[in-house]
Image (cartoon, rainbow, N blue to C red; front, side):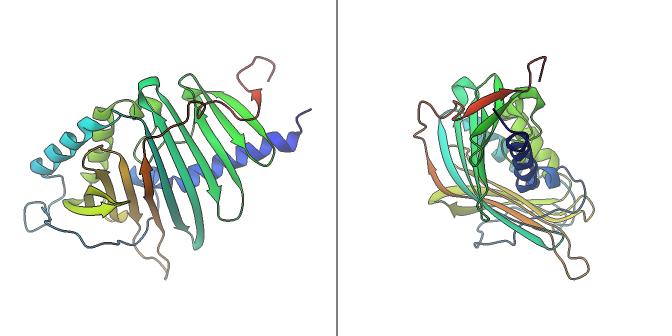
Length: 265
């Protein structure tokens, strides 16, 4: 019989996953924002008008972002990410494997914490499963009940499936600061990075998102809060390896399923 502890552990993993994807929450402009310090030299910046002092996204930058995102969700993807966050002086690190089959509206996150805890969040296109590797159990939820964003800036499966919603979400966050665009190589792929400084009147010092030029895959998301009391919260979500080979059974729950949607659960 499934123990109470085995049901609680996946719920704790869900909370942990939400914290590690905190770039999405910070991007929404609420609270102190985490993010990692900027790395890699940029090229050919296009800054906002008014000597870079005006808040907003220049028309040419918006056009470029929307143009890149026309490729969003046009092919299967398997992307390994490294996540680093610092919040209230506490540092967390994790590896995340994101697998995506857009044609069937399926996605999966495999999360491995530096401390050893691991598990998966799986959407099979109909339901969501929260699976714990230690307890070998998966909790089944309705997909619309998921409190975890599939990716930074992507709040739910509906947004993940619609490139125009992704573009609107990203531009809505970037428009709250002084925005520029630059080129970078991430995970051996050419990328364009959209960077906003002074976001939300100082809520964030920096917010950045980078997309692969040819596939529109999200390769990097970064948020950096202003330094306060000798502490600076930050979060960095960056791709380390990108491919398109997604196993046929990737979106099947690997363990016993406990259905939380059933009337008696």
